[in-house]
Every structure is written in C-alpha cells, then in structure tokens.
Image (cartoon, rainbow, N blue to C red; front, side, top):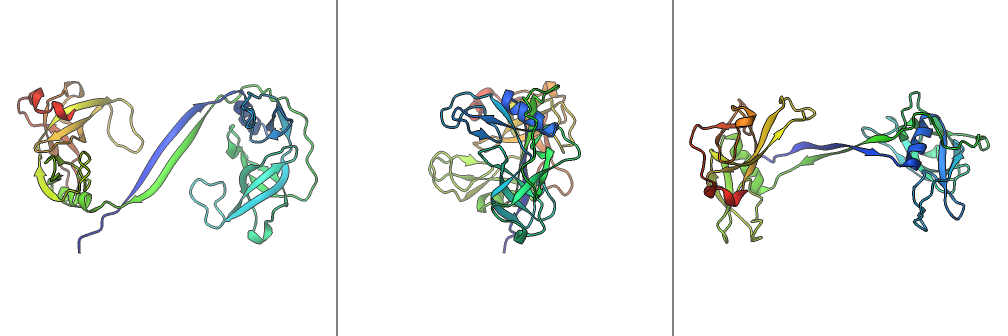
Length: 313
C-alpha cells in the first residue's frame, strides 16, 4: 500500500493597519486602564466602539467612558485552550455588557470550571501587568460580587495615542495531497519530475492536480519532464522571510520544465541575482536526503528563444 503523505503547514501574515480616531482612543484607553465606548445617534453606548452607527451608518465620535465591571450575557466553556488564546488553562469565552454600555464585549473569563459560570454573573476586568494599546491589555475577566465601579468620565483625549496595530493572522493545518500530487511528490523523492497529460488538449501539467485546469477533464497519464527548464519570468526578493535561511537579495522564478506546459516556481542560485534573465536555461540542484530541489542553477546552454516559452508567461 503506498505511503499516505501528510505535512503540517502554516499560513501566517502579520497585518499592519492604521487606526481611525475612535479605535485609536479605545486602544489607547486600554493602555491607560480606561474603557471607552461610543454613543450612537439614538443614545446607545457601543463597546467596543465603532466609527459608524450600525443603524444609520452615520459617522460617530462621541466617546463615553464605561466601567471595568459588567454582566455576562452569554458564555461557552473552552476546555482546551489553543496557542495564542488569552489563558493557558481552561476558561470561559464570555460576552460581557460593561456597566454603562448597551452592547457586549467578547473576552475570556478566568473561572475554576463551567459550574462556576452562569449568564447574569457579575465580572470585572483584570488588567495585564504590561499594556501596549491592544485588546490583550485586558488579560481577562474575573468573577466580581460588587456594584458597578465608578468612572471619571474620561474624554478620550490622550498623550501619545496609539495610531496603528499589527494584527497577526495564522492558520495551522495538516495537508494531505491527492493521488496526482502524491505521485508527483514520490517521484521528486527519486529526483524525477512527472506531470500528467490532458487526454483532451494534450497539455502536460506540472505539478499535476488530477484534472486539466483548461478542459476540466480528469488526467491520469503520467509524463516525465525536465529536469532542465527555462526561466520565463522572475522577481528579485529583497526582504528576508521569517524562518527562511536565505540571504537577500535572491531570485524566485517561474520555470518551464522541458516537456511541460505549465511553469512552476523555483529559486535561482549559482549566478548573481542581477544576471538572471528571461530565457535562462536552468537545472535543479538537490541536497542529500531532500525530497525536492533546493534551487535551480544555470546549465551553461544558450538562452532559449522567446518563441519557445512565450505561451508560458
């Protein structure tokens, strides 16, 4: 029985965004242990604040301080916290309507177990020891038996306001290739490259997907291609990627392998980055034990004529 291939994959992108006046005041307030909402045209106080009235769509900037105490409106128990969540021990996700607010804020509640949590329970903010102007400045909520905390009526004006944030986005998943891609990967482990030919248009696609992207019909006929190929287009990378041990600048290119009708991606090495060009003939370089080429290097052949690869740009 053939080996079933799997691989852990991570898609990660730290998104940097600027803040408008309302969000800036809200996050700066968190840094200063102040909770701010915004008043809508009909007098409701929205927390977290928004910059446009959810009913009328009118711009709103009337900031109102609310209390760090509130009431749980609904909740769900999280028995197995994941990486990056507010608490490392089991906790409750809660919607809390802070005293003075008309809407609820989602955050974590530190409680000993689900039996200790109920809708209508009173809670208060537990502030993080170090605050920088993010939602995590609220470490979590905790049970509270008292009345609403008093607020000073802050105006929302701060020195050195927070003007931007970095919002990390990350997806961890396990990838399992299908029949066609598994065959391609198994061939790579033998330092061979195979594609599949479409029975209708007769084009050879590498890597294969099990179906022709043009005709939409299933493919099954394997065709060995390369290993040499031609650089069709390329880019020069000047920003070093996280966890990638390659010095910049380097070149990443589309490479049309001999016998293939679709260009694949590959890094170009063995040549100064400013000498890489369209039409450059290249071959794969394998490292010991690797299941795919480390990079492609020039073969020394004359450059390919443009007419031979123009359809693969």
